[in-house]
Image (cartoon, rainbow, N blue to C red; front, top):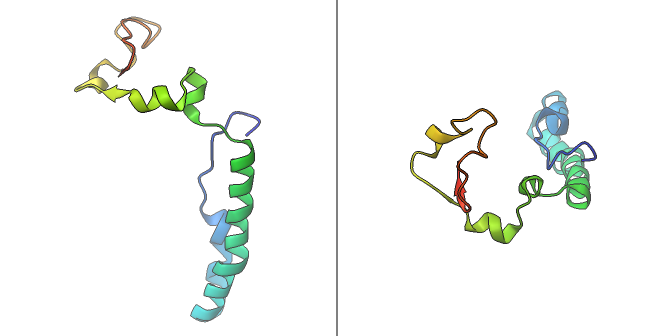
Length: 95
């Protein structure tokens, strides 16, 4: 989060030992205990430290919710001029 991450993508770090457990009951116990605890710990960190990705672009939740994607936006993504999307930017549209 200190380096700018806005969340996490979890996978094997949470549940990888599941395959080492004996039978369905052992796997369920692990999933409800250790794996769930890991997810909760990461969730607490994210809730305490992360900020929405769109704030990097000066957007508030209100502005973000007003953005409407225009038809064919992906053809204009990055802008025609060197330097990217700043060229011809229209407030409220996604390029």
